[in-house]
Length: 289
Image 1 (tube, rainbow, N blue to C red):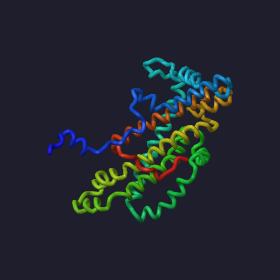
Image 2: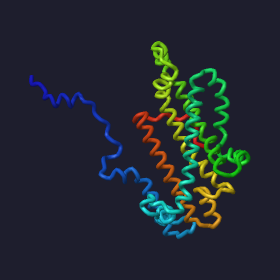
Image 3: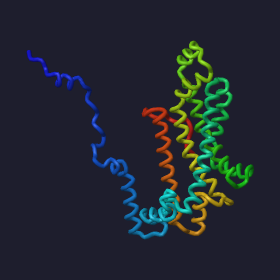
């Protein structure tokens, strides 16, 4: 009896790979953005056909946004003077609020999650606090801090801290008890258990909370700048443009907010992939609104 060829044996033993849902394409960018580009094209054609002042064509919106904010010199990263007075203050407030919310949420969440008694006592308060809509807290901070940057940063921190805190506590509680027992046998210190066991185990849930917190920080940053008394930022630009009935600037600001949210999320996902790995993300325990 003739023996099968080695190559045929290897092919018969190798598992069949699932066929991709989409065929391989030389234009992966167009394939990935096909729905978005199709929607933009439909909007462009409909806007040019209707010629409504309320819904300008997307190309006109992009052109106006470039002239308004990205027409500066290359040495200033193409940022115009309006961009320096509009985008940078908003990003500074958002970065400060998000950083404070992340640090406080991770620290308090890990501390609460590692103690059953503390978690049992604090869980009702956490569930109540995260159920309050974050924009509803902005008037409270207006009374406490008055209108200004401290009020805006405080409102971002208070609204964005809860997803990080709740997810950090859940991630710390999910640490494998067997590993903790091994750490106790090896006589690891509390700091070593935190650094080598608890934090790596909680990282997927922590990043799930950070993604929610990032979107909330962007929402609260804009909302706090919409209030009377603000004098700069993207939210102030929206209010000022609506007052002057400058709808093209309103659409340009909305386009800018969408682009900023997308780019910030991409950056956070890159950090998560670097620290956690390419595994499936954990489902967040917080909420986005």
